[in-house]
Length: 389
Image (cartoon, rainbow, N blue to C red):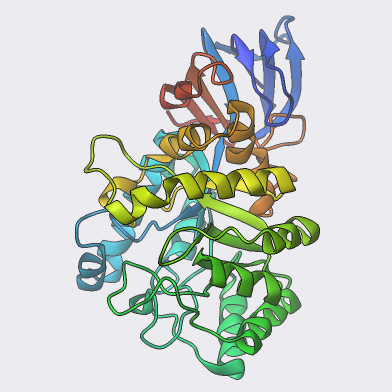
């Protein structure tokens, strides 16, 4: 048995920190959480010092196969599978070092994330637990077509989802709209009609798989919600002219439980955002506030790998960005732990520090409820009870 002592504990749910917690770990799981007291006889005590202990972060949106370079598409297309898998391993280790113990990979090539999922399942030090979608489903020549997930028509969508179910994916990802990184793709236009989207949703649910939609644009978000998707990635309600946070769509998301997997934040020190992006920021913040007031489930993702400013290991910037955009530190920490685990379908054993949960833990210097910047000061990471940082 391992006994972990810290100054304070955020358990993933409660509004207040637990003082002088003692977390007991055995067989890779938390078996007890105590406020104060002595470690049981025979337990190996590790005093982590003046830190706050948190559940391991759950990143709802990563691309381990993309290297956050100035040429992510070109470098991916030039790499063979073994080279690409080596990069994915390094990306996973970078995420783990930042306190991310579970990632949801929403776009690989050739189902390589499933291979990495198997590797990290056997060896906690190899990286975070991986939940994988395989290649995202997209139209021929559509957004991220180079990952190999092209499908068209109702039967094509059903076949694409069946293939992923047979491969053993954890989630299905559909590019409902286009996206900026793909030349010729339009992020403001739908790639599929309602019948195709509905067919994908029904097939995914028939295989008991969650299905999530790529959609920055307001029209794409509305299409995904109408088709019955379980979650929407990005979910910023942008238009060519600004932001249009349709309250009817937001209310429907809250009513039926469609989650927003937000991909906020970027590394500091880069160039300022382009003028169209900067112009949208006030509207983006207002839209997030509307979703918050409506009770939409909102989780924290990073979209790591897609741009240089979205480097692997930068997840804490996504957490702090939520606070910068109006969320409280408590809301941001929940979005990165218990709520993120719920959106990823692993809330029964991840995202909280409680008996029966996986011993995925991160220690940070300081009090993140008082100053969210403490999430950058990672001093220890445990995955499955094994100290990896």
